[in-house]
Length: 368
Image 1 (tube, one colour):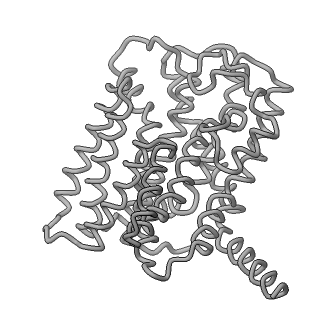
Image 2 (image 1 turned 90 degrees about the horizontal axis):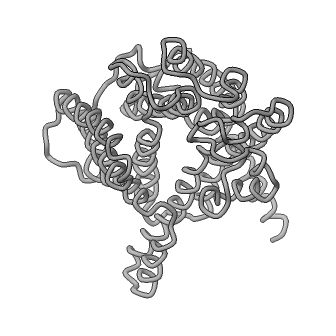
Image 3 (image 1 turned 180 degrees about the vertical axis):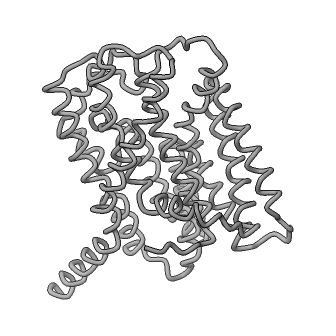
């Protein structure tokens, strides 16, 4: 199958890298014990493999870019029905089977292979409570309607799903804010702005909005700046430095997240403004990001917990060549798993959306 290049390949390559950064970070949390074994190599590898939260920040900027671009380009043709159908189809076609499959894996692992890991006392900072406590129907339903990490726990071991709550409510809130602002009616603007007080992850919403800023200055009202590949390279250097600095600011999450968000937004703007063409050899990497990164993000955690439960069930390993090999080897399995999962779910998003729309229109016609 021949892959064609796109001006958005840079974004999709970043999505692939970010998805694997999350996976590697979660594996490292389960495998590598603390305090870290001495040695510069261990310190460098630890820094490189603890970028999960920073990767999620990158995802927020990219999400804001696409959603704000879609909403503002639709102008007067914006339809809440079409918009929410597109958003929910995109989210649920992956999330629903991910919850069922992840819950099944967690149940089997916890029931038949009980361990300190599944009980939340192995040492992994990503599992600090018994997995069985959040495998109940109420938690499942709360995750279905995007309340996880906000009003209910994330389902089972899958703590990564917290970010989908933010994503969904940003999807809902931004068009409401945009339409209220465009109406210029104070009785609509004030209550809509007041809802900021209850939106999950308020500072993350600000970072999400940075994607819209990038879209505005890169495509809608392009700045008259001559951006070259040299500027792209410089902005990427700044971004990489920000990743290291953000990890040093672990106790100041808002500052750390904002630093990463702003620096990545700058790099994204430069890449789009420079009309960056990626090397053809990287195009398949971009296609994976476009078609499978969401699936990988949504399904990886229950799988890696199940697999690692046979290797580090009771306590973590000291940092060594064998433990680092595990940290960088298991993501290959997770990537294959995510890809196969995406081929049966994410790849069918448009078909699912068309089916639902057809059924909805059919029901409307039959009742009219």
